[in-house]
Image (cartoon, rainbow, N blue to C red; front, side, top):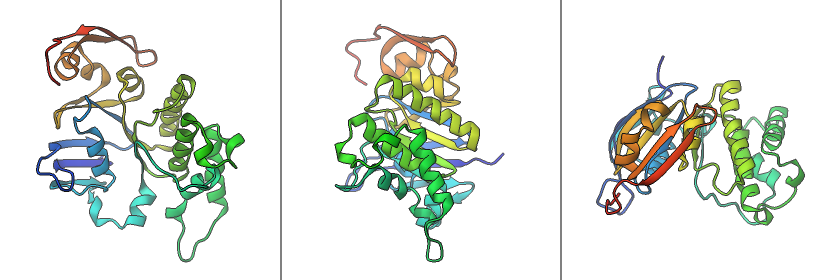
Length: 267
């Protein structure tokens, strides 16, 4: 089976800087897989996600979508196949929730194709999935933080792409909606065969959701394996600096943190 996303020898740095944030990253994501990127702040997770979304051009190496360099694909064609939700998206003032979700269909429009029934169906389905029918006519800026987050998630769902790239998708959600969103992501993978790559800070959430976890540490990939292989005592100590362990199963993982591994250790 070919990789949905293939990352080869990736070196990334932000414009105007002289230091690589991510170094020699090599990783493959297979079709229909859920991969969670975890690691301490500043370890390169969000930067990597930006490169996968072709929002940051690599200094060296390449990101390939089904074998094709993502920078060789037109912007519109790429948007039909890959959707990204950044950490802090901003909507124009006065935009309603429904208008925001409709924007997810933009890549499917064209010179000879206007708004169609499948567009309306995709928008309605996304609003229902994110429990937003009651606020569809409200402007985005009047929503609570959790409602706003769900509106953005509905927008990327309406895009109906093969790949979803999500940066902290549960930020700002209350605990009920947080778990509902994680369950929804797994469900759409099962129903649509969507490939998901997302950044999560909560390790127990990542363990519940992911097929594989990519652990980042100081700009490098420390480990890329199943949750049980990744979130062991040694990794939690070396990468996160805590004496901790993950127990339970994939339905109810429990992360127990006993103490910092070394209070003087600098991550």
